[in-house]
Length: 250
Length: 260
Image (tube, rainbow over all chains, first blue to last red; front, side, top):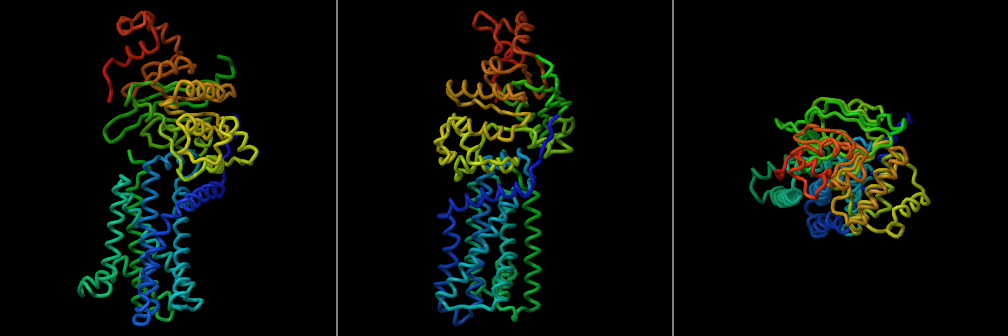
């Protein structure tokens, strides 16, 4: 009997990553939207930078970028590929299931790093915002932690909804709810109660940890609590999303 | 059948698949030998795809065993999957990827080193040397099937599972695909295919298993099946061409009613 050879996990992951990054590159027009919204917000809030501080403007813009990546990018690509049967084709190959998802998540984490960099560049170029080296490093870390909560929320949507069109409309609805309620609620325009809810919602906690990450000296007990709540949201969303996820739509 | 064919590449024993309370596959047993094309036939909803999906590892089976090239599919799923090549009923690849990139992707997943020369040779072999830069969605149905088949055999597997591979193909493409399937057999590998085409089963398959309501009704060579049932009153009653065909036997065994 001939010996059956199992490919190395690193080889499998490399092949998946190359394909997923190529797919992302070919979809670059759609990716522009992910960059556009936070950049437009950052540019249009130029006057607020002086009033509310650079960290406020940057953290808000970045949060919108992270929400877009998690809810629109990740969720829709998973829903579409699942509906087309792409995952099933991969699953009949000797690729462990986790490598298929890990590759997708790694692509999104790279997007988070890119959006964060773009925000830094635009913030510097347009508003002359600079951070300390520790501030930049910590912001990348908090962006990854913050991005994870939206990826997990996206996982909940694809876990509970099978139809890709419904996933698309639901993720857009959730996205705009986060943007509108986050923007106006966070500023107290929708009342004190909504402001408090917003503060401890995934939008608010992510914004809090990112703002503190930009100015590490401003990290307080409230920021630590926000970080813990963010991690809690991520775990709860991920468990619900993964538990309910089906690899095919039939 | 020569001695070469006595070695079992796939052995399915008492396989049971259940969706909720519905039993889709009930104690199905069969084996597929080296250098054999085995056809799995059955009406819609008979349990063909569920059986294949269980072998492929896409669905969990409640009981029974699946041994692929000596590897228990439940205990060593990656080994079992590495030993088989699969073409699903509706294959799709990322529409943004070009044909060459799809081949590179699956070569990587199966741990096959694909040099440019090898890639060119593969594409030439399936008459798609000019399509390397095309996206999968831009290919015709026949071309897509050829790409899909070549991907399922890119790692030279001992077992190839093909779920309705010729559905929607024109006669020329179908004949060409049959030749490719027969070429797999000539290399000493085993093939399991599901089909609704009795002509295909009769022309290509060495043995066929007819499955209905989740159970295997019979397994034999097409000729032996016809011979065995040609005088059955049910078969004669459904015969339309003055001679008994495999389709007549199939309809007599599985019933005339149309399945959803």
